[in-house]
Length: 164
Image 1 (tube, rainbow, N blue to C red):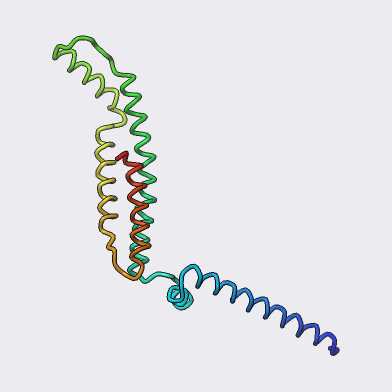
Image 2: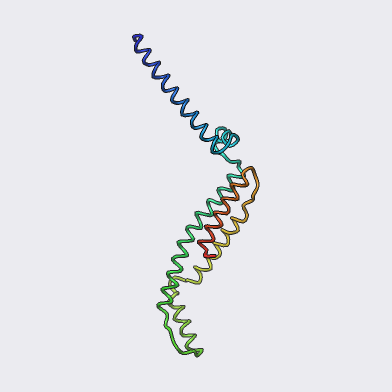
């Protein structure tokens, strides 16, 4: 191997090293600017910006948001089923007890295949459980502000879906 080939290989190796160091320095600067020194050191050392308690809180809130979005689609299905059943029910101008019972029976028969009442009960129970999961997230640890902010956005999303 000639001297010029060795020099070319060393130059290539030096260039790659400088680019790698430059990228690492840029990443470190960006991460410190975004998360601060403590979180950056925690990320480099442990692979996560947050303490285990904080990570657990964020994971619970993320899980609740995912489950609430699933429940939102179920709420839409229940609303559509309810509207369809209203359209299919028989309206009567009679106010007698027999007419009211007949309308109620017709309405119930229209819901029989989908068990609307059971669906609404299950949906309500699931949403209550999700709300209690959000309430159970403790505001402690080193990232109280971020957890509080995430909790507020989760509650806001839950309220929009739940129609509160």
